[in-house]
Amino acid sequence: MLITTEGIVLKQRKIAGNRRIIVIFTKNYGKISAGTSINEKGKSKAALALRPFTYAEYDIFKGRESYSLNNAQAKRAYYSIGEDLDRFLVASKLIEYLDAILEEGQSRPKLFDMTIEFLESITNTNSNYETLLLAFVAKTLRLQGIMPEITCCADCGKKLADFQKEPGQKSPFFSVNAGGIVCEECVDREKSTGESLIFKPSFDIVSVLQYFNDNPISRFEKVALKSDIKNELKNIISRYVSFYLGTNVLDDDISL
Ligand SMILES: [Zn+2]
Image (cartoon, helix red, strand yellow):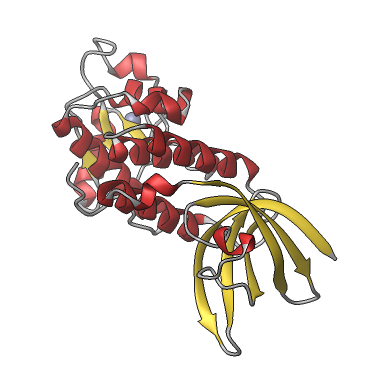
């Protein structure tokens, strides 16, 4: 069966017989590994579609046990990503993150559209790359079914308004293990077990997570987070993602 789908290349590797395995995040079929004899360094139009950070349409033959990529047409090449080291490093981290969280053959059209939005946004801006990545990862929490609880204590269910005296002023505690904000009593209990990852953010984590959730990626092209807040948030989200998804994409230093 021949299928045609939009996609972007996540990675590739050489195999025998001058062929390659191309791992593509496709819009309609999720992550697919397909064999091909098209060489990305070639001069054909299809070669361009195999390069990193190219949004393309792929013609793929679906066999009984494997896929093979017959042809491809580039729709948009994000050249500027390859021309700036910081932009390139951040965009590469996004690709690495997608490769880690996507499962073969599981269709993820919303995540795909968000990926294209990210590539557009990182191309539109000359700074803020890491905030865009942070926004992307934060927005995937809901799509991955691990959105932190931010309306009530994730442990006992007490409403936020009942344990936060000045709404929006101070941040409640945030517990990675509990999966969201927690009240002071539950913090004490969690701390006594000694194994919990608990944060007391210096900013209001409830409104920040809500803001990330409610706004499109493009909004973050111009949002300049203070660097200490950005680092704190990055640390929390990074620990959270690594705890629930087992991937550590935000957890090293990109100075921007
Ligand atoms: Zn509680």
